[in-house]
Image (cartoon, rainbow, N blue to C red; front, side, top):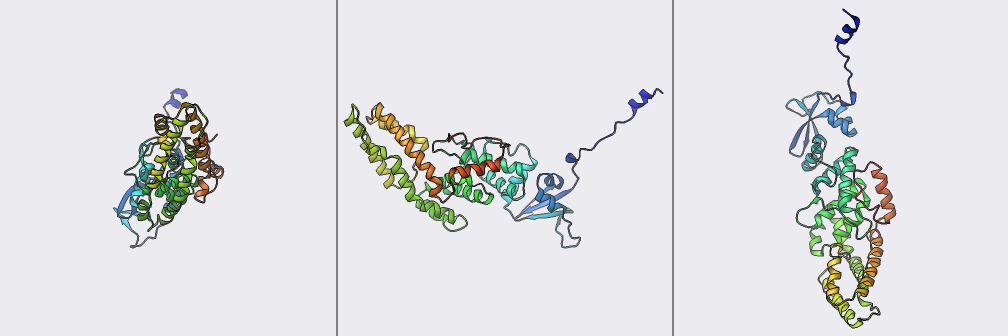
Length: 331
């Protein structure tokens, strides 16, 4: 037989792709009363912590916990967090990049465990989701609303604060604390006991500073500008000032009301504020709001914005899957 024909008939040598050659090693993970049966090789390829944990030889005795003949790895994490974390690893469609709609609790759980077990791509993806909804360097920055919440309670802000501190994502803290501080004392008091207590207390203690911010931002209401309609414009400002005093007396603590700014100025215009005074008022409010926003980290004892921005850039690197944060909004 011709040698060329023989060479063509010889089976092609198979080459194993080591990084995609997983051993058939099933393990059972237990968290609280939930158990998960997964392939250890895939988990080890994603997490250096699990790689070392799985590689550590198990004692061969009757005390070793087994389920269905497979070794059990116990995790001291919540079953809810572990469920989200493992689904993110094994189901490629479960934890899509921002702005895919996801529950905040899912993102926080994945962030905590990806940080704890060293799964860098999930860690960055979770931070991208949070940055889109909880990080801006300007008071009027456009935050994405893709995250899913339940009823509005301080628990969401306090959970972001707790998780951000746990994983070292301090750039999320100013806005999270500011959001927490917009809740009333009555709403914050139930959280003073327990692991969220110190964060609720800091938010509660900032109420005076938040009211100071409201007054400084709305100070343009007490400054008359020379115009052709001075009487009408002064009357519109007095109406606005009356509404402001009512809000503060009822416990308002949000200095920015970002979503309501246009509606607010429309109301002043309807009450008689002329076009020239409107533009001056807009400029003064924007200047004062920007100044107070720049002070915000200091209000909560945090590092200044430039340091927080540097932390974010160092943590996220150039492989961030979205750029919904504040880098481009402060310039």
